[in-house]
Length: 314
Image (cartoon, rainbow, N blue to C red; front, top):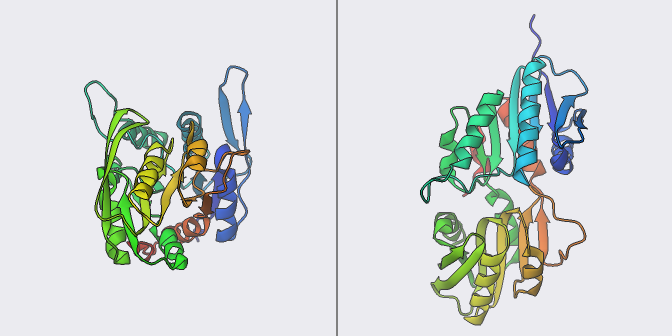
């Protein structure tokens, strides 16, 4: 009689903190793997236990994107060559997602190239959270489980018991996400309109909607340099908002982000642990909610061919 396929979890180096929690919630130990580094910067991941016939979940957020993404590709290739039954890439944060289209001449579409590379490496399925653009799912010809942080953020928002809530989109691109939250919470919608002088630098910023007397909740998929959210926060406080909180799934927080957050009028930045916060930085305004239990539950349902639609509350 054919044995049922076992399940194993492995982690890339920079997502070990999250992979350990996912494995703990799932109820199995994290698999053993190692990476050999060479003096020229090359590295070689390897599995330190058998994966033959196993369904292998490799957990790796791609931040910063280059090394972590290539490490994930090498681990997928290694699992394939070691006769794994299925290989699933669990990418809580999907790097290169901002490059989802040609927004000017002679540029790459990095998200599509990333999808091609994952498929070429031999992955059978991808699991991720809050892509920068939903259409990236269509870049894959394999199943993609696209999770949302709403199932984590909404209970926390309700626990704050705030009056006069207004939901704000930091830019036009985030209007769809923010409108879904606003309808679910029964709150008015504010849309920020911004112009950029160049990448990671905000020009002019205005708000469309009633701000005065509101406890404003800004929703976004990520906070990178924090230029947009801190500028929006300060603008709304100047317009008479009672408080401003930002909910962003992925705390990229590069460059002057921590300093900008500390100096802004922001009440709280609520993020998930898809990306770890940098050590020795001021995190007094940052609240971290874990996605480990959510991913563990979804992995269990996917592995057992069960529906995951109950996880989408918005």
